[in-house]
Length: 220
Figure 1 (cartoon, rainbow, N blue to C red):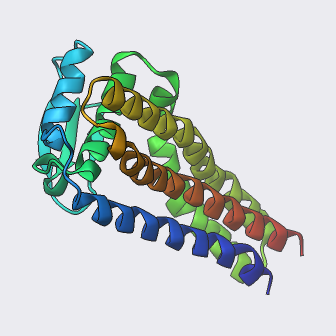
Figure 2 (cartoon, rainbow, N blue to C red):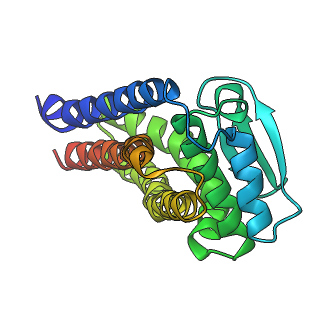
């Protein structure tokens, strides 16, 4: 019962956030931006305006697989974003370009998130299984040790929030000020980027609830 009360709402929030991302992206993928520029063209223009000439824009495989890699300085855009001039495509491309701008300006949370990637990976795998095994064995010390590792995942996700919110804020500001998006299209940009931001909030809530559940189980 405790598991249902604590974990189920977080899971439902994650599913709802994922649904909103896909539905809003699909909706505004049908709406062409008035500028007529593709996602790749908008991202390239944003980088030029910022004086960034060492970032490559490439295509990536898969739906919504868009991301920026600060190590290789690569901005990867899925085909539905790279080649499309839709409001959804331009929004996603601008958001990812926002991460490249963060990198160029030494945005501290971005560097911290990159540094936490290895530890978060350990926490999500080793830490979670330690908690699970400890729960089945009624070994509270093992649960606590696993929880300490799993908390690194939560830390990573908390640091991720300002990184993602800031990238979206930069994207909206540049899209509007540079004329890549016209007034009537602002609603679509906000819908796409706000839905994406919700997925990061949902992930953090889900991790927090999972962590609290195992900590409470360790006390029983």
